[in-house]
Image 1 (cartoon, each protein chain N blue to C red):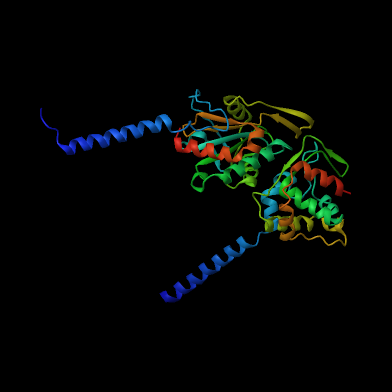
Image 2: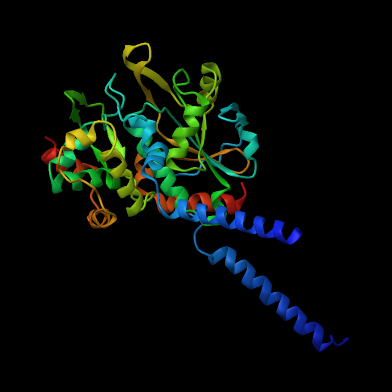
Length: 163
Length: 208
């Protein structure tokens, strides 16, 4: 009786541990977005537009990713290194000395890929992407990471790829 | 003349050498520790305040024995705050692991009308789960800001809940006795992180 109880207990503990390990090894994009991005860009990706504070990710990220390889690299660069400069999104100018910090020392390549893939699959971004294939891999993030760009440099790259 | 036993002479010699070595360390032991920012050694007043966290009131005295880094900002801040919070997170990561729980990074809202304690907690945790976000009644926030000569003012208001807040962007470091010890400006926090992490470690070691 006691033996069976201990066995059940042991398997429950094992299951809990396995779940915890699995949760740790595969970063969930939605969870990462909620933890690190939503405080500014909002849970629905709409940003804060009045007064123009944080640009929306809904639609814009899809459009930039649809611009091709350069667009996807620019998205990765923004998350890794941040961006500094005036942006215009959906006709709204974000020109209050906007500066987003880079997450390269906080988030891993896998986490950034997972995060971006979540954003690319959310809100109206899939529509903006249309048929363009736009998933981001950890390898692509690692390649961009090696560039060690400044937020000003990311801004210059971003200006070239935004539609 | 009475002979002094050899053992006593040897003992005295050893003690004399030890004293000389000890003093020489003081005299020639290199310059004192250089902080990244001019230490405010003349400030002996103990700061204190009580504000609201997501899980209830928090007083500065709750952190006695720890080093506290205070930053005043707001969650609708489009430029300085996110970057400065990231720099504080980077400094925190550079600390020796055993120091991390003893260096409390605290962000205080200068926009208490829009930033609830829960909003502040979520914002602070976005940068580091160990960071602490505080808000409170506008009058309480004003009193805390005054203690540190922090100023803030609404600007570019386009609606009741639509505005920016101009505010002092420095980070204030309190030693383990709640005395203001160091102030870092925005640029230093961006460029001097390894040195700042050393400073915080040194403040913990020194214990004051």
